[in-house]
Image 1 (cartoon, one colour):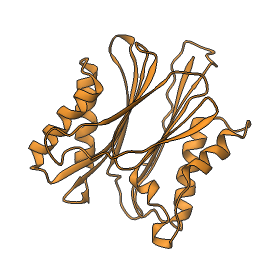
Image 2: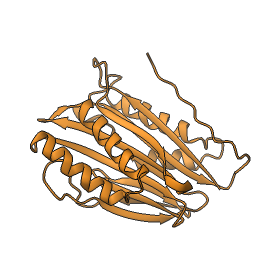
Image 3: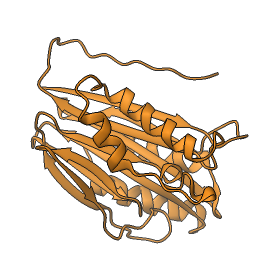
Length: 235
């Protein structure tokens, strides 16, 4: 089996730095990988400091062997203590757990997570609160098996709000289905880029909010033991 990850990020038009942070970490003892996406706010104003703190705190706890749910709760409580309840983070965690052979998806985010498995497209949506706004906030968690063809789609708040200023709305299911059903376009980075570009089009070429997209795919195309990472950062 092979895990591929594609991430695309775009800052709000006219702003130098995105308030969203995305990171990929290895789980301890060869237990798999975790991908974290955080969007930070303080007093309803975007905050890179908050998202950076959240991602680094959760990463540190997971690498120490702490369970995802416990790491999220501890980070939420610490964020609440640090900012007195004036900050919050919209959070998504995806862990490819090689110990349990499952993909564990954790959300503290009102926006849904999508996944494609066994030929069916699913939307996971339920009540879910951002972390940092109160003590003892719990994550919403679901699991799916690690299977060939499984795809997880996570998008940040700015993607879901794309086009709202112009009376339009993004349809992630339609966009992902268009890519998945085309046998000539299977690369996860292409899917992430496609979604970001469509969101930008809905915002008339000027992103009204920070945008991030994460795509994970499981396939049976394991052709090498070499692990690879590719990065592209505008500077």
